[in-house]
Length: 219
Image (tube, rainbow, N blue to C red; front, side):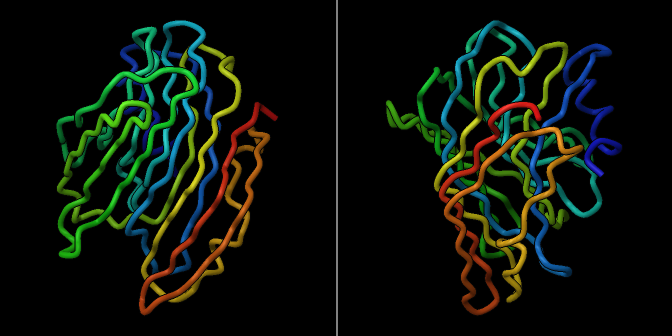
């Protein structure tokens, strides 16, 4: 589970023992299937102050050894977004990124290559066209959890809603029922809305499209 496997790593990333608050939605594919891509667009919320705000979409593997994520980071007082694998097994350098600001839109794309050896992340700042691409050798990981997450250390959810749009998640297999199933709402902690779901199957690939995923406020 995310909290048992990753909490210690995230606390280390934050740099001190902290009061952590979690809000996340999590999709699982059908049994025996794995995710092969995760993309969409994040609308950047206001950042009230410098603090340990981590807002992210991400993928977690079956062994719960870490999380592959695109993290919007508020520690400096200005939002910065970058991609990476947290936090060990394997130890990988964090990817590149850029600053972004309230009401901007940032597109994220995470995709397993056709050979199954490398995941590539691309982030694009829509207002300027700025783009960064990084690759991560995560062939040993089988990702079976797709998350929309808010991770807070010693700060409150005080930035308004976190909105994702034009979300596309693909998995192996032919069972698309997971796309039309409500995601796990961790601890029922989040008031959220999801609109515009559609699923399709082509060959051995399930494509799940979601027009909008909005984490609105604490429940």
